[in-house]
Length: 253
Image (cartoon, rainbow, N blue to C red):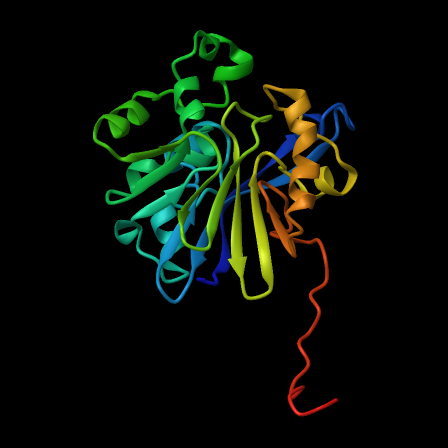
């Protein structure tokens, strides 16, 4: 089994209204959120989770400290042009719309998530505002065979599992990663902040509230050592302690 190192790569930040991410919680209060993608690196290969945000669209949306993804990845020893697989937690603009920065990549996405892009609901501001204005890029990538569409839970690469949880979007998926310390979970925006998980507050942006609440139990049943939430200023949340292995236990009674 491949064991991965998980490297959060920060791409920008902004202030956001609390209840947008913490459902019905602290309306009017602002909090800092971070934009990231995640590099999964094993001895055999490198996989990305999400593409990050396009620099031009980030600036249009008021994110002034956005960093070009190729430069950010190069700082951790990854060339965007060499990436051959990207797991997309969902297709919102800040998680998937930088797909064209990865010319060799195949994108692992839930079938229902790509189908949702063609829904008439995209014309509603409460839905469409979270997607890139250029949805055609995804249809073009699909036509060129660049999507690996899954109908549910899948293991696209050894040591990595995707689990469809919905809630935030119809095809939101979490990513379970085998690490040396045990399983880790990258939540995407199914769980945007550490506080969401700790207090079981669903994301304020959701398509299905029941699924948005159910994700907490689904993650806990996976018994991860650590989770990486979508936008928290802290890049990871330790869920349980890992028992240190006893050195030199052989030969002792």
